[in-house]
Length: 581
Ligand code: PEP
Ligand code: MG
Image 1 (cartoon, rainbow, N blue to C red):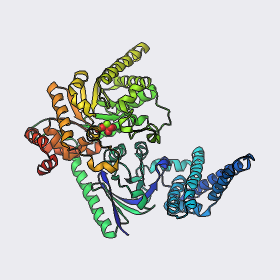
Image 2: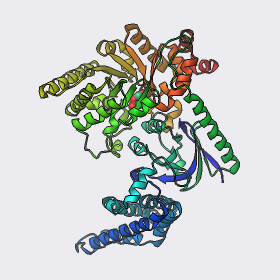
Image 3: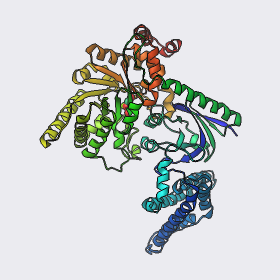
Image 4: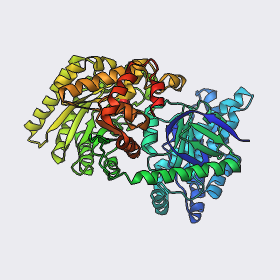
């Protein structure tokens, strides 16, 4: 039966494929298709892992001291029974044989399917067995991870071959929630679309989905409960709707839309080499936001005039507490600088905290993460780590133009402390006799307090960049990652627009560079307003560049200025914006 689920549109386009349900804790499991001749080996891998885990549990049971609590021995018995459950194993085998999933993927797919059945049971005792099954499967997966040598080299090769291409039907990942680090793992993956139950429009998970240019819908609340493993789905990333089990007529309609979108993209491609000039001849800088050094080259290829935001924290995430040292960071930043081929790279220092915890499960521990020890606050609280990052950036700056930018500044003392640490990092390199290059220094304006005292920031920094995602979050007191309040997250709220206008005007008056690097910059619906407010530098995901360039080419900046002032003074800016679009 067809039904639809509504959520937030975060990454545009249409994806049609089968659902792959996954728990966020298991997203690190590798997903790839196997060749028919590898089926036997994958089946054998499941058997070997199961037998090894069974032996391990049996040994534990045999070695239990006589005074061990009886529950422990009963628990081990339950786990052993679950391991021997032929139904579970034959289900897993089916995913391998019929769908050609690799062994780990088949196991988690079967787990999700059976877990759903457990959830629906009336008997609370049986319902609780779900946790046992999860533990057993996690043990099998751990065993497999420790024995990856048993994986055939052909399977390894296949894994990389299949990155981004498909052996069977297209697949759509469905999860309750995915952390930004999880999303990054899927950056070169087999998935054609993403659906999550949690998350807001500018949560970092949504941002990474957008950077992958894969249709995605987040904040659906119920998708992971209503969608079943292997259901056919249409993900409408423009409307924020997921159609489950669509009829043939719907499939046909959406396939047509897919073709129209592809044609539209081809048309936009023609703008790639056109200079970004408004109708009245004003040059506009269109830069890219990136998450990884390897993205630098794609940003240049997409026609960006530089990188306006490299979110360096992605180098730090999901590493089980092993932070990258100065040398590792230097090599990463250098790779990004070189990927830019002489175009400027803006590296933002680590912005960890809120919905980007260092550890996968860290966010539960913090009281109020978005208002907590985040971004520059965390860096200043960890000066040794911070100076290592600063030294790495300064060293990378000998290989090309680098701008260094600091997130979430709000206080004057944060400015002085930060600048002093940059100076100290320079001196440390000098003392070591290590070469380094010049960097321009910039502050992100993403806390209302900073926008209101913009003159102080302009005195101390070479440039400023508006982080509108956070600026909206903090001005309106809306958690950007919380789907429950996503309807209140309003980029056109007059208070937000006033802060943005004030920062742009102040920077322009002082002749300092100002850009927007929040998601607003990549929204073509906002381009004319931002141009009218005097903005001439936008930084966005490379996939948005051409759509924004099209708006720039059609705009007359000087005519837009008085209209933008009207929008600013309006009680309902949205209405004015729609009239003029
Ligand atoms: C922002 O807040 O707008 C921004 C660009 O930074 P991030 O999204 O990484 O918080
Ligand atoms: Mg921010």
